Every structure is written in structure tokens, then in C-alpha cells.
Image (cartoon, rainbow, N blue to C red; front, top):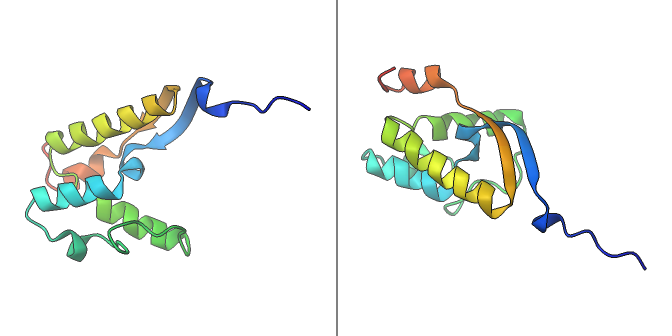
Length: 112
């Protein structure tokens, strides 16, 4: 019998990650509340979480844009980057190509 491969302990890389798409529901709720919004009103959550499966691409985009709208200042970017980095380290991901859409944040009021 072959040994099972221990995927978790091996170093990994992750390519083409959108930082905004990595924001956990708990973090999105925290961001919305920090800007004075009712998270239930501005985030399409189900019982405080994202749907387990998206019904279609449009639902994914709607959630992505709702979360992006909560990223309003550099402190917000720092928070999501920090949470993201910790999650990557926990998964033993040693290299990530991460991007974010700056123009979306400028459109939400962030100073370029």
C-alpha cells in the first residue's frame, strides 16, 4: 500500500489571486461595521457567511463588488493583506502572485 501524500506539509505556490476575492466574510463584516454600515444591508451574506456555492458567475461578481465596496482606506487594505498573509502561511504557501484592483478602491473614495 502506498503512503498517502501529505499535501498540507508541502510548500505550495498560488498564482493569480485577487486580494479582494480573498476577504473572509468575518473580515468583510468588520470592514462594513468600521465604516458605519450595517453588514447585513451591504453584504449579500447567508447567516453571516458567503454562499457555500455560487449559483452563477453574476452572484460571485455581486459578492466580490459588495466586499470591494467595504475597502475604503489604506488601513482596510492592510487588514485584508495581513489576514491573507496569515492564511497563506497557515497553508504553507510560500509564494503568491496577488493583485488588487486599485481603481475600484479609488472609485470607493480611497485617495490614490
